[in-house]
Amino acid sequence: MASQDFYEILGVDRRASQEEIKQAFRRLAREMHPDVRRDDPQAEERFKAINEAYQVLSDPVKRSQYDRFGRVGTETGPVGGGFGPFEDLFDMFFGGRVQPTRAERDAPVRGSDLRYDLEITLEEVARGTERRLTIPRLETCPTCFGTGAERGSSPQECPACRGTGEARVTSRTVFGVMTQIGPCPDCGGTGTYIARPCKKCRGSGRAQVEREVTVTIPAGVEDGMQLRLPGEGEAGVRGGGRGDLYVVVHVKPHPTFVRRGRDLYADIEIGMVQAALGGQVRLQLFDGEEAVTIPPGTQPGETITVRGRGLPDLHGGRGHLHLKVRVVVPRTLTAEQRALLEEFARAGGDGRRPPDEKGVRRKPVIKRVKDLLQ
Image 1 (tube, rainbow, N blue to C red):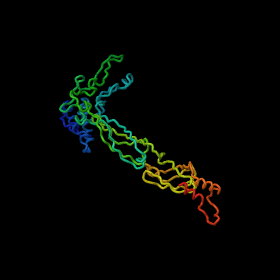
Image 2 (tube, rainbow, N blue to C red):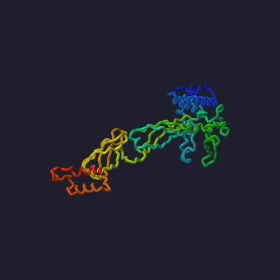
Image 3 (cartoon, rainbow, N blue to C red):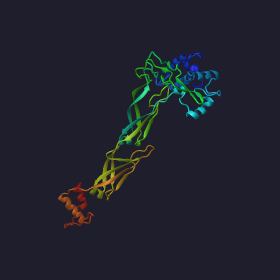
Image 4 (tube, rainbow, N blue to C red):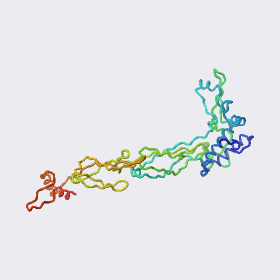
């Protein structure tokens, strides 16, 4: 659509007045806005073409150049509010252009990006999840379709600047008479004012609403990671595109596991007999129970690593589970337990005893200690 005739895009005659061009643009903006035609995949490109045509035909200088050459920006010189060959000299003494041109003020403005801080559990990190978020954001006003005017009315030409959107201040300097051009203070540079502002948006063209957005949290997401949802930010101004939504993930501390990258760390308690004889301990993980093997002779403070039972990695693979052993020693003993332990100590701690008087070998001491302490 970029090569299409601008007059044809707006549906006006080449002799149309500025007011007719404005009315045509507003009508098309209401009808063709992407938020109105969400099911039309070409809506955004069509709206950009409408806006581009209006930017040229609403500016008398650009329109004249377009009528003569069929395009804007030829070798005949700059278009707009520049100073031509004297612009560099103006920059030298006054520090650059004081105010943007009207075309720049009327250009589409992209909507703001938004941030949402989301707290999730370590279980959700392990499995991945989806969350439904309620986001307050500025949307194109559904009542006035972004014009800012109440239905049945339209913005009027600003009487202070007569629709130019500019205010001129002339002063005498050592270099002669200088004219500074800035945005009109009455209309803010728009060239129009709204006599009957829309009650929904109060004339701004955008209204704050709450929208529900679904965000997918991938398994293995890191604390502090940002998830970008394109086009879920605030609506733009004057046909500008929508901003993005950034969801910042925060992982809650877990009562049992500590996360380091994709590995998990935890303490595991076992009895002193189990540490000596070995065995199995059943541990509840995020996706079910895990039987952890305790090797015989495990010492306090040792670490048992269960490979592949950590967290999933965003790029594939899985971390490990590291269990630090804590050996629990009974604080109180029964008389029989104490006697067995003393017998175990006298036997040298190897759990073997010679046969009794009848030649019958009794159960090893360590086995009897285990039976009593468990």
